[in-house]
Image (cartoon, rainbow, N blue to C red; front, side, top):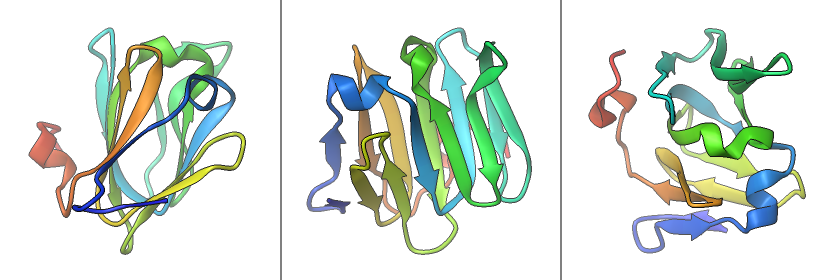
Length: 132
């Protein structure tokens, strides 16, 4: 599925939101917030190990220049993440292999027990209040 201005939102299932990691490829900048108010920004090519750490696994982690992981074992710690695309799009992949392509900036946030992925056009992390 591809998210665009015409079809801007998808809500993942409980299983897709809670098992393994949510892999985000094509990421340039990411701004994130956990429910305890901890927030941060990682620019493309910089390291990221953010949010509450459980069993040596951070909630948000940049593992390559353009790949970010959200550790879903602790879904209830996730508040939101804003991910800008290094190129034309960002690809979000669940543990089961379902992919969602966002042609622009992706906004991932928790709604109850599930994650929602939204298309936000050409926005930057600063547009969402993150200090870059």
